[in-house]
Length: 179
Image 1 (cartoon, helix red, strand yellow):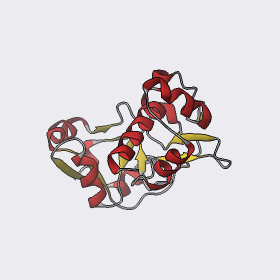
Image 2 (image 1 turned 135 degrees about the vertical axis):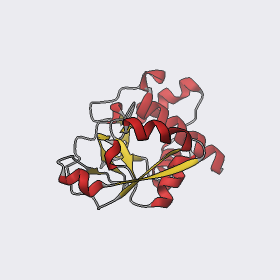
Image 3 (image 1 turned 90 degrees about the vertical axis):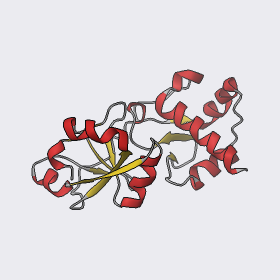
């Protein structure tokens, strides 16, 4: 499968599993799971050809591992981050002393004033390393990387969650924790 086609399939999956399952009338349960066969069938409504083989490639090889199957591979979901993919299995854990947030340089002034909000996502996403944060920020324009004092946030009683795909999550970051 061509890289551009794989990217298109991945974006389509993100759209219907995270943001807009109604676009293809896809049933998503409260934990974000969708039936694989239903997804394959209903994707045809938007003229997107999905097969079990294509889904396997997207799930297993997409860089940041954004999707997962259940144990018997009959259900699929997007990892954390959006209201349609509630990740209720996450447990609060102690974070590393610092984390990184990638954003566009255009957002920095606003963030310095009002902090980092989850907006349409279920959580604020943070990275363990600067390189990942740069890649995330580049998706939104010229990247800027903010250093988060996760240790102090945690000591102040704020909760962090660590997802299976190595993303650190929290509800909100007050400007006082941003360096």
